[in-house]
Image 1 (cartoon, rainbow over the protein chains, first blue to last red):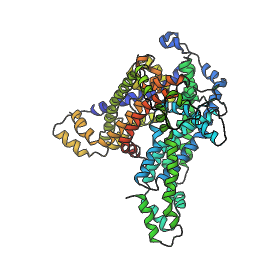
Image 2: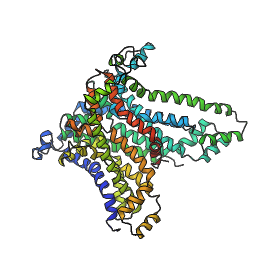
Image 3: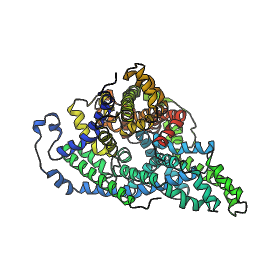
Length: 292
Length: 291
């Protein structure tokens, strides 16, 4: 029978789980960040005591934290434009034809997006290997190298980011391609009748119509790169000497390897604030755009 | 109706257009450029599979041989027999199975938000959507503390729990189920069908397209999940494939063939699922309402 409770029964379990693992953790982090919780406190809450803002003070004075912040900034500045430009270019090119062959190519570009990061790390670690890796061999054929892809502090961030760009492009290409296929045909026909070249049509008709999709892809990519974690964690563990450690990886190391849950929670709160601020800033700056 | 046709048709309307020739040749140039990019993108996977069947001596040879001179499957056997990857495989499948329960919960919530009016609907749905914006890495440590507090660390349920439902999934189900005609549901209700029956025998079957998408996506994300198995499973009996492979990674590059075999074990099933269901997967992202 339909009762007033029915909708709540339907939405209840999913909503409760989302609250428990989406909203509650932020509150827990905020609370724990004001304590000195560690491995001992994990088993016995009576061993946890308040620490005020001490964790935050220590965090802002921690050179490892600032190194991780700078690294994260580097990842965002290198990664976001690369992913957005590359996936937009591939999507525009893929949209030139609907043939089976182009659909096959689309799948090839999508492959890295659906394969597990751990397996990918093994494969790239092997390709990057400085003794018998294929990439250095190919470079040596044209007289370059050998390059210390993963052990040079100057280069390691680029090597790690490259894998993430390779992996992050496919999904965004699919999203942009779906948006491209939703562009009304009449507009393209009108532009062609007016004698607009394809480049001109793309620039003046298609790209403005894609504004929302591009904004979506940019915002989600910025968020993804602000919490950059997987590639650095599995390829380098943040090394050498912390030179590829991102903020997320720093938090992971403090929290799980160091069992300093209070300290890591303070870092989580700071990361959350940074991501929220950057996201709001982006959304606001785009809202000022002219509407078509 | 393809976009190419519509793009070329107007050209024949204005036959004097100077760019016409160039435009006709362009698909070949575009095709070539895209093919080169696709080969470069897919190459690491080909290299993985080729290296997995090379003997160790060959996979460490410098300069590298592109094709194996001796093909061997010994590393797959070693993974299964000596390294307990059979157990990791079973655990991974168990995590995937638990994730499928989450799928039902998401479908239920999607139905509730799509077809019912109730007090607090808008604010609750808004709250659900905001969780999409909250990054996993931020919640990683507090989530661990929560799971620890309720005693779910070191269980398969604990591994699957944090990612059991996603706001994105609820949103996609809701979007799709809004299109199911309300009359069908009302008719069943008048005929005396219970709410559970309506959901199981009318709403779910009518949602097959979105269900297919979600099943494939859930399989892939469950299969690939790494962070929670790593954090939650401290007992080796609970390791999933991804954790087992991560441990193999720590034995620094001693045996690339073995590592590539392990990577292949993890990647190939997903590739097979992808090839079989790729229409659903791609559709899934197109369906998300991003037009």
